[in-house]
Length: 394
Image (tube, rainbow, N blue to C red):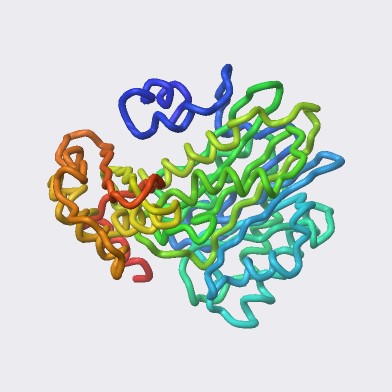
């Protein structure tokens, strides 16, 4: 979604929240254009049977860079995640190498060695220390990585690095995504570019997908800034309630612009990408926003909101435009099993938007247990999701 589209949607749909807290004067650039000081590329190395672009390379050429790296909490974390945890300088990432089509997850010691080899090949191509390179992978789980093909792809990608390589990089990280997800904006004298992927296996344990953020702003505490922005964006979405083995979010900041990030800019960009992910959920045709109100605590409100958002019954009602508020009551009650809860009837549940023709629907449930609230964005569930996932490896 463009800045213009987002602005137009402020009064008409849930996407209005994308720019509502962004600074005035946000200018959107072409998504292919990266923030100054960064180059990227995407090439096809044969990892995908379709021959589509599947290797991405990202480089920061500035003399100094500070960074933050957030990784999945899934106990079955993939090899690239473990390499980033154990062998990466998260505060000084200069480059990143990514492949799609193969997650390199549940691949044992071979997978770990391959992820290291992938990192080392990228470090050699970019002429930087191996610890300054982040590794990310996405795709089928449990399949060994064709490391020789990948190494050749990294060499080709290095030769193709460009300050306008954002679009090709975005395409290189796609799996079941229908469209690339990227955004480049300028405000307050700084530029921020970002690329993300995600369509299935989406449930926050932290990041929920792959995302790469580049800026020439001066960011005093990158880790704190990124965590805060992720908490209000990627942590607020779900497609199917499944936490990925490969979730990764990387932010790099050079400070070359000599200006700080304008308040709300990072939050607005990441929320925009998060909403694009939900709208592009596997087979998705509609997006819902569920708000749980009147909870005893924020944690309780989020528990209820997630139970509703991940309910197959509610998600199919969203798809079928069925205003069945009883499904929302059931999911909320299940989340609070064992607690005292007043009967949830139509006065406590707003579900009429499920029946409307719009592509977005806002629903809510009022629990009557306190003053806390939380919301989650989610996608509908339909036949196409089943088809995609029943044929994923065949």
